[in-house]
Length: 502
Image (cartoon, rainbow, N blue to C red; front, side, top):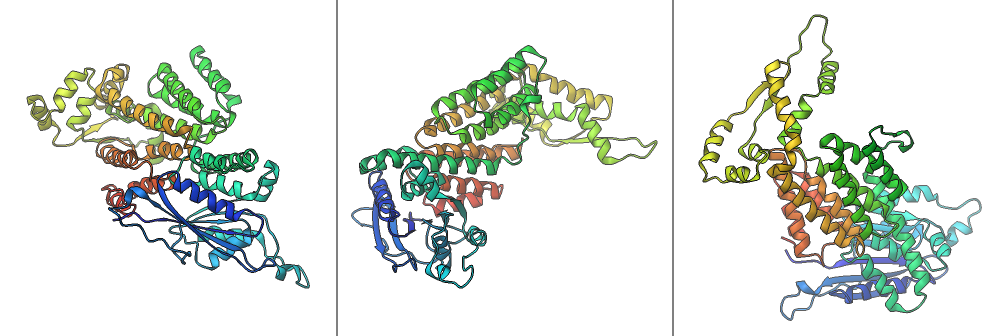
């Protein structure tokens, strides 16, 4: 499938810089490998309508031969990717005209009001309810970004177009970095400093709100209540308090706790050092990236190998939880059966010798063939019996040698490549870096579940590496959601084809 142009509609009233905003978007595209076209249709005076600016961007890399793309002159209902409205009623008008659709459109609007003539001349209170307008426009859009942009512009000593430009950058819907957006403002040469201030404020606000939505299920603790007795653990918690922003500390401390439980204090220290490297590359105010990277890095570093699974299944807390759930009557005996189906790969990856593990993974080796015979059928292990419990408890005890295993080394290499992509974009394109961090959600579980998720993760990252100048944060999020939609990757294939990335 061929690439399609990015379609952007801007609804702004006179004096709000709608033309400047449209010109910035055109300049942004033309300086970064896109053909750009803009048109405008002025509205009626006296606040009964606004000027509609329409922009289409098409990647030059997708032009074949000497055939130039044909770009439209006006937005069509149901066929707009981004709508920017300088005032809340204009957002409502965009919805009314069909420019905003829940399957496609990102709607970015200011929530301030400039009342229409009909509202002003009403005998009573003729104002339209702003909260009702917000709910109506929210329901109509795929992604909805809104706050009082007029106030934000006034605080920065700038105009609302700069705030809208910053919100557009942070939304992640366009395949351009924050640095490229800011360079566009600088090339304009007029009101550069206040425009950049307004841009930065909007970017920070939108970015932090987006991260907050995805961390609602994280386990957040009151750090003042955490006072570890172990000196090395206490030192690590104090390091987090001193070196990380306050609103990221809780989730990082939770990551430290998880990794101490998974391995040891030194492993948690590695986690903190990796986050410090990300922090050095990121903007000082980009706490959203730090929180999300901290969350998903902790999940990846506590990967589920056979050692981890065995350890969790033999914990006393698990037996207590099962007993509470079963609700045994007096005199009843509880039996717990674990259905295990270890594959050759899982056994090879936890041996404390990487050479032996790699040899066993080779299908041509006699060791692989012999081991496969013993793993063709699953086993039932009764952990409520002494024999079954000791078997899994011994396997869980191998964690002290985990660093020598093949699985550990492979996972650390994967983590480092993922972090390198985040660090590469953290300064210039933080919205894309944030979506790269969240893509770790695809890597989870163990066995076949882990393999399928890892395959989808690599597919998404390879698409990003091949088409980095075309993949926006919004597209990357779409690919991630598609990969999570089904285990076979069919929805991901559809998404790749839909965006001409296959």
